[in-house]
Image (cartoon, rainbow, N blue to C red; front, top):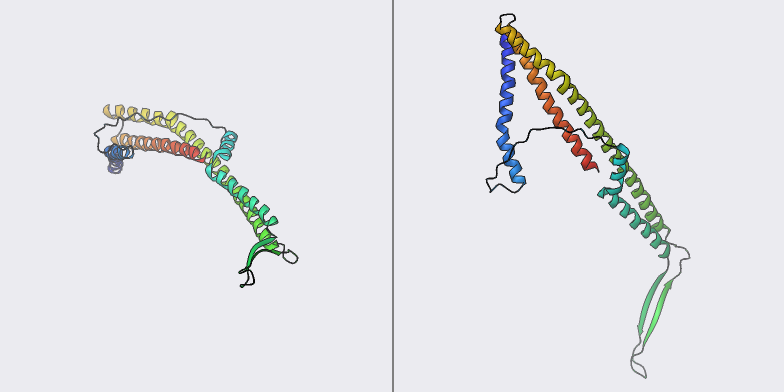
Length: 232
């Protein structure tokens, strides 16, 4: 058991070392995104912190429904389709201009204007009108589906952020202090000969696992915040 615990502890330490090795590579990626790949500009690492942000669900939803480009595009498409319906109501009369040229007569070639008019007796463009009205109805339903999707994205992002924030608070304020205190006491007890090294390894392993979980929850909060900002 002591060997297994020590192996687990070393694996946790190796994982931390691997993450630290990825820092320069991640810095190069950020420098490339900023257009600084050709310049030796150092990037300073700032300690990561998570600031709790409280959001008003109704305010976010109202903002998203007002400014989302896809919703604006849907509204414009509906307005254009409605204008098309209005045009189909007028597109029932067909006028045509005619220029008649006769063969040479006493005064040479004779040219006369004319007009062709189709009366809507049997065909009042009902097919085109029905098709245009159906297009409007389809676009309205698509817009409503999009509005529902926007609301769902905001609700899910807020729920994910709250869950990550609550879990982070438990890990940060309760789990980590308890495990840190326990492993320190275990190390002191081991030094005095009052406990085995197995307990020290187990508590160190649990502490590193909780620390990794803390970082994951910080990441989850930022992802949820980014999703909220993208949704509006």
